[in-house]
Image (tube, rainbow, N blue to C red; front, side, top):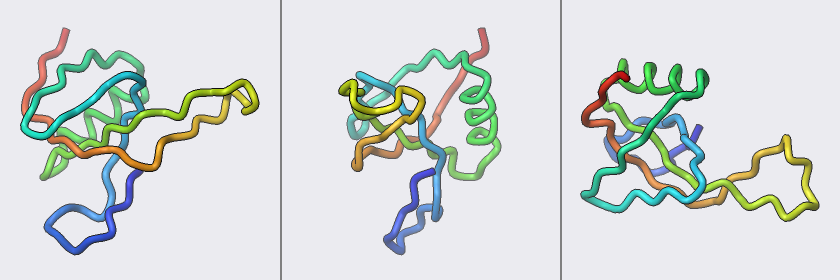
Length: 88
């Protein structure tokens, strides 16, 4: 979860999708192929929410000194809105 600290009309928290190499730019679209069960569940929850916001963030590269089971995330990411989807 990403926690938002300002007092805008944004929700207090949004789910995050850590995706290496993905970059979501303002006013752009980022097509995603989501197939892992935990992210499918997350997307289902997002689609059921009023605002349909999802956080995109880059995982920190594993430099070999960390436990590969521990996923670290960069401190800055972005929020996007799911505007359409199709099931395959």
